[in-house]
Length: 87
Image (cartoon, rainbow, N blue to C red; front, side):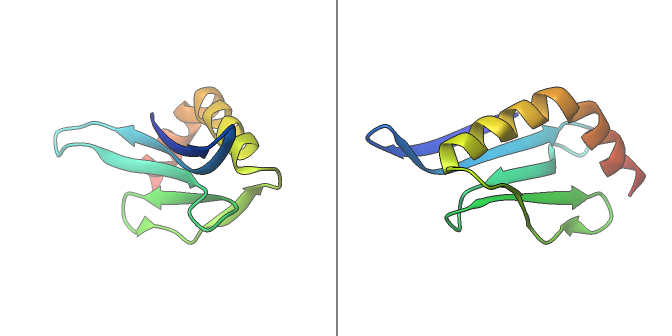
C-alpha cells in the first residue's frame, strides 16, 4: 500500500491510497482511493480491463475518507487482490 497526501493546516486537501501487487511483470495497481476531484472516490483495476470508473466510497471529509481507505485496504487487501486476479 502506498499513501500520499497533501494538507493545508490540519486539513487533508488531497490524497491517494493505492494497493499494488508485485509479480514477474512488475507492480500492478489493484485499487486506488483518492480525493483528486474534491470527494472520496475509489477506482477498481482489473487484470484484463485496467482502471474502472470511480465510485464515491465515503461521504465525509477527505481526511476521513483517507483514513477509511487505509482501513479498507488493511482489512480487505486479500479479497481485493483475489478479485483482481479473477478478472
